[in-house]
Length: 223
Image (cartoon, rainbow, N blue to C red; front, top):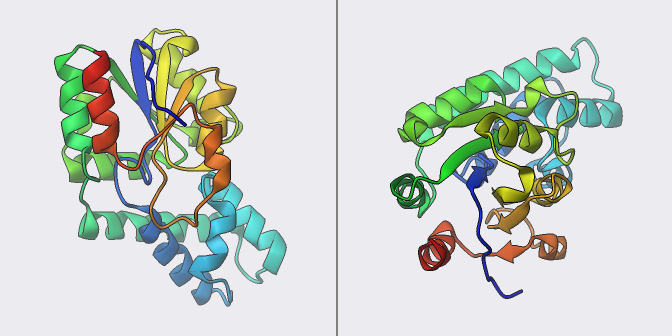
């Protein structure tokens, strides 16, 4: 698909796989915690739940395996705490992230964050990457009734930024995220997370890029 960006008022970023290469960390955390409770799931299995909110992921796998003597909430909490440690140990922004955020700030473009990750993980990532000042709003789907692919988290971010959904450009990496942004009536630029298996469904995005640096080049042409 040809990338011809149209004008926008705000850019709303997903977090995992877009700002930070956290998908491998999620798989490590889930595999470790699941194995402790007797699960046989592996990192390959987790492809099925990429882009879902963590509580939805845990409920999905609990229904598949029926773990004993542990609740989905207990498992969820253990995974989050392990993720906090892994992020602190491995934090690094993906290529082009800081440059893109700096460029948007210089051009006075409103910037938001809309993610399925929890508040504690948002804080951990933004602090570790030292990028918190670039974001006007940060919204977690943990406060929404439904996570992605439902559009709620993106609609909330737009409302908090004071812009119409149709004026927003979303930056995503997964199919569930692309659907979430499209359902919110926003334009979506997709930068596929490199550890995902190639997903032909990502052509549903309005724009496709191989990296944030490539998106930045188009942003410079438009703004």
